Structures are given as structure tokens and as C-alpha cells.
Image 1 (spheres, rainbow over the protein chains, first blue to last red):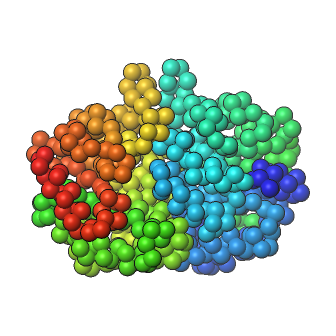
Image 2: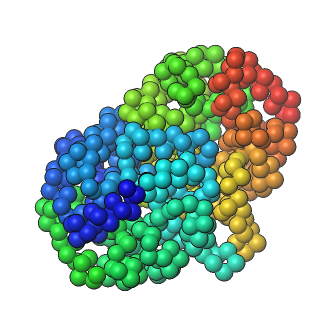
Image 3: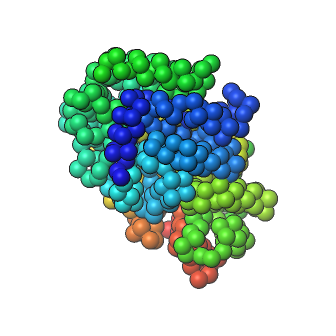
Length: 255
Length: 255
């Protein structure tokens, strides 16, 4: 089954476009990373369309953190195997280095999808494309203000982020990441990508992105196609299940 | 001591601009990653100005690989503490994610420098800049052919890689990475960066970069300022020490 099929089934079953970012922070919780994640997964797995662990939060603890990232992925696969795992690691390199990163994501962790950088060129990402059933998310437009430094530069009148998206669609079977804080850019990417391309949208809540303009800009004609991530807004809520449910409901009002 | 000072002392002591890429590959050697690295370090530490472990080769083995990456860094720091460690992990993300990656590199591993992506914007890399004594290498021009997809696009007549370098110099205390296969681009980056900015140059040997044009383009007026990486050409040579010595000698002919 392809990543998109798995995603669509999970989104339909839970009637949800919510993705929970599993970014456990030892500065904010005394639980182990895995125990923290386990309680989030137990209480939200029937409310989400995907989980997105951010590799950095595990790497900060070194080998032990990586072991807990694997434990987290294994737990999702054993307790709610219908929920896809998007490994957010934003790698981008060349040649055989990409083979090794793909091994980490898809073979060691068993993730269903990864997030990748575009700057090194899309053709360089071939080792990821060889995993035909996996989702490959190219980071075309960040949610951060600093993303304007380069991503909005114009090449012959066209912003770089659009060129990246168009190039990527020509080369591989890709999906995109666009920050919720840039609804106009999201609209352009949806136009370029068409309705069959899932778009991962980080940046609502803590980062300032608003739901309504983002959903109007990014939903497909069938009111689907978005994976709306919330990390801190859910995992550090007093009641994470309630926070996930609330977000799901708010999103579904606009669908 | 700053990274640049540490680098210059090592380069002067060993009279070498050679950096050995520690990219141990279990597909090519039956030794453990650490045992493989140990034998390379033991035989080359008086011939190099830096070591550059590529994180991907360790991550592919998961938690155990990361433990061996740490063991490798610890070994360098205990047996040849004057040789700086450049962690090649090409991360680039936003906000607190960068804090966590910096923790991995500088606190868990104790690396002296890191390699970073530019696409998310340079101002976003502030958490790395806060480590004042560490080296921050921005990947401005890859050694790969695919780097031309975006890096050579022109914005108002100027290629993107130049804009990235100029922007980065305005924002932070940065160094650069430029592929040996692009000597003209290297010359432009040296002009932009001036003589006080080390430039890491991958791509000689297996990737096709030639020494003479690269050195003419990138050496400072004092015949310094380059960190010339070789990975496969040294670590899989029949005699790695001899291969490192030969490369050092070939480079020094042009200095």
C-alpha cells in the first residue's frame, strides 16, 4: 500500500486531518521520551491521520534518544498500525549519504514517510524515491519568517519555492511541506501540485498560523489532501486527547 | 579557543590541509564502525587538519551506530585532541528544533564544527551561532551535478549560491562548503568570504574534483584556508596512511 493510500484510509477512518508532532522535550517533562509518547499515542490514535516524530528531539539524547525513537515507531506499528509515521528529519545530502539516511528512516525505524531538504537538488534524492511505497515530503516553504530570505527570491519573476515544487514534481513522486503561516504560498503550491498530492502543514498554534485561511488555501476540491501538524499545542496540553479532538473539530468545520 | 584557531594550529602542526571523512560502511568492511575508525585515526592523526564523520553512516545502524559515532568522537578527543572534529550532518530546520540538533552535535558528541543547510534561512540558525567557539559551515555549493538545479539559478543576475554566502556572512560567523568539482564557484566564494573564512571542500577523487584548479581557486593569499576532504579515497585505500600522506604531498605542491 502506498503512503498516500495509508494516509487517506487513516484520515477517513478517524475523520481527521490532524497530525500530532511527537517532539518530547526532556526540558518540559520528567518522563522518558518513550513513556511520554506512549501516553500521547494511547490517547490520540483514534483522532489523528498521522504521527510526526521530529528526529532532533531524540538525537539530542544521543544513542539512548534514538533507541526511544525506534521504540516509539515500534509502538505505533504494533498498537495502531493504520496510522502512518512521518519521520521529520529534513535531511538533504548527495550520493550514497542519502542511501544511509533512507536506511535509517525506512529500514531501522520503519517510517512511512520522511521530510527532505531541496537545496542539494531533487535528482539527488533518488535513493529515497527507490522506496516506492514511502512518502517523500519536500520542504518547499517554511512556516518561519526567515524562510523569506531565500525561498521567496524571484528567478525570472517566479519565486524559488514554486520552482522547487515544479522541479520536484517533474523528477519524483513527491509531496510537499508548506508552513501554515503562508496561506498564499500554500494556495500556489496546491495549484501546482493538483489534488492528488498531500501537503504537510506545520505552523498552526505556537507558530502563529491560522486555520481558516490555511484550509481555504490548501484543501483539495474534495476537502482533503492536508496533513495539519500540531506538536506543542497538543502534546503539552493539559488534556492532549481533548486538544486533538478540538483541533480536529475546528478543522472539520471548514471542510 | 575558536574553531578557526584550532584548525589553523592542526594544519600548521601537521603541515596538512587534508581532512579525512570518517564514513565507515558496513557494506564494505566487517569491522565495527568504531574499530574501523580507530585504525584510520591511529594511522592518520599526524597527517590531517581535521576529521569529518558523516552522521548518515552511523544513523543507518540506529542507536548502536550513534553510540559508535560518540565513541569515535571520544577517541579523537582523548588520543589526538588537537585535531578538530567536523560533524557532517547537513541539518537545517527552524526554532527549537535547531537547539536540539546543536545539543546533539556540540554537547552529546562534542564536535568542534557542523555542516548546515541554508534553505530555511540563515537567521534561523541562531541556536548554532550561540556556540561562539564552534565552526558553522554553510553548504553553499554542492559537488554534485544536481546542485545546479537550484544553486546556480540567477536572482537579478546573481547565482543563488552567491546570495546564500553573502547573506550568511551578514548574519553569523560562518564558514562555507563548496564542492571541488566547481572551481569557478569556489573562486567566487573565496572572493566573497575573504581570507579569514575556512572553506570545506569535498568532492575530490571519487566525485571527480581535480586538485590544481580547486587549489588555485580556493587557497588564501597565504596558501591556507581550505579543508580538503577525502573519504573513500583514504579510508578504503590499501594503506590509508600512505593515501593521506600522498594527498597531503600533492596538495602541498601547489601551496
